[in-house]
Amino acid sequence: MELLTSNWWLFDEIGKYFLPEGSTRRWVMFGAILLGISSGVIGSFALLRKQSLLSDAMAHAALPGICLIYMLTGVKDPLLFLVGASITGLLGAIIVSEIPRHTRIKSDTAIGLVLSVFFAFGIVLLTVIQKNFGGNQAGLDAFLFGKAALLVRYDLYVIGTMCLLLIGITLLFYKEFKLLTFDRGFAITLGLPAKKLELCMTLLIVLAVMVGLQAVGVVLMVAMLIFPAAAARQWTDQLGRMIIIAAFVGGFAGVVGSFCSAIMSKVPTGPVMVVVCSTMLIFSMFFAPNRGLIPKWLRLRNNRQRIRRENILKSCYKTCEERENWKVIFTLKDFTTYFRFSNYATRQLLHYLVKKQRLVSFNGGWQLTPQGLDKAEQIIRKHRLWEVYLTEKMDIASDHVHRDAEDIEHALDDKTVQQLEEELQSPTQDPHGKSIPNVDFSRERKTT
Image (cartoon, rainbow, N blue to C red; front, side):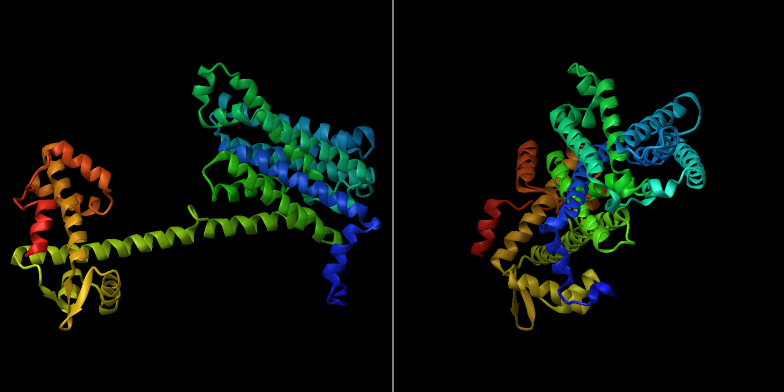
């Protein structure tokens, strides 16, 4: 409630970052931003290489290394902690990779074993330290959930240096990492040292995890590798863009996490950063243009409506063809009976076709316009050409091709139709003896 004593408290807190006494806040935020960016960059490769769960095992395996280093030295040195965490984290990664090779245990089970055993051992050591070595004063409990506000300038120097090193190495070997991620076999044929590069990528993941432990925590560090990359993956299929978006998501989470940790003393940095990343991931899963659930649903709905409209035009064309009269007037009952649509849905479809000048209202019914006849003719042409292709080229019986043609007629483009005509030598009839519309027929029909 203290934060609400002034309507301008938020601006006051932001303003402190620009004052001389806000230097600590600036350093903490800078470190969190670098951590988020490096996590997004490295996490992109970890996600694409399906090593996300491995990073979770590394994070939990780091806790014993931190505790052992403190028990041996009695010093809270982030560089020493980084060394100890990296050793046990790398050891955990090696064990995870070796267990499936020498036993019948699968990799996911091996990850669970390493994660639980190392983390349990770390909790035991942490309890011993808190009772006998003054662990709370040493701040080791901050490694569980992270606490950026406890970071001093030396800590940030170490974190910043390691983050810049991670980003620099990734940029330096970007082409090699990209090739190895998507086509390992081709990378080997080009003479690239695949095993060494894979070891380098694993080490980068280990370092990325270890660097973020003090700010984000053992429990949630894996989320900083997965969530920004997963969110970025929803927006693009290009690795370069994915890395940039993931870095932005991670950096933004660092800004929000460090700010909330600074103004609310009991709020740890790690959970806030993870909440921000998860929120952006959920937003991306729903609203990303290509992979988002809502755009997918809209595309599916629009495609379904398009197919229904095309089927209406096609049915009108067939009726006109059978009656040899291109001026047939159709009633609402004709459509609802044939397609079994509701009156409301049918009227919506007909309204759209009238709006697009495919149909015209006439004497309480609807009639095909010249534009509607052209569109219907294109659909019929695709349908019957595909039936000819299936019977002549695929040797399928004529009574088995109609349903396939019903589906494919809505997906064929003009280029494919032209290729079909060339390969089939411009057939004039389908397997059922019905004529295939062509340009000459279209001109003749328009004059009648």
